[in-house]
Amino acid sequence: MMTPDSFVSLRQRLLPMLRRVAEQLADRTAPGYPGLVDDPDHGVVGIALAPGFGLYVVREGDRTVVRRERILHRTLVHTSAGREWFGGQPYEESEEIDPSISDIELRDELARLLAAWHKHPLIIRQSDS
Image (cartoon, rainbow, N blue to C red; front, side, top):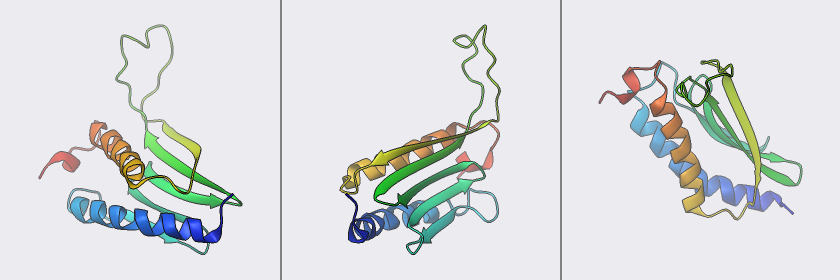
């Protein structure tokens, strides 16, 4: 069961990680990105790296949900033979998480978002330093 205090605690642990990523990527993203989302009154905290690339932790009633957004691209040429696989499609998944999730697991969620963003072939500037 989620209490308002458990979301506040989760938010306080995640927000410094999101701020650090935003600082590091400030000169490698499209204008206006990365965008931090921090609205504790509505129970949401997260980051958007680009349109379609985001990670959000959302309070939904008595549940805590991690929402991942990314854009798919076609890299599975051999394994997707015989099936349609369109590139550029938005992909969103939600998963309920325990509010007492460890800092390492939070960092891993953020790392998965960054890995998907760095692999996306349509954005060249993001990997330049």
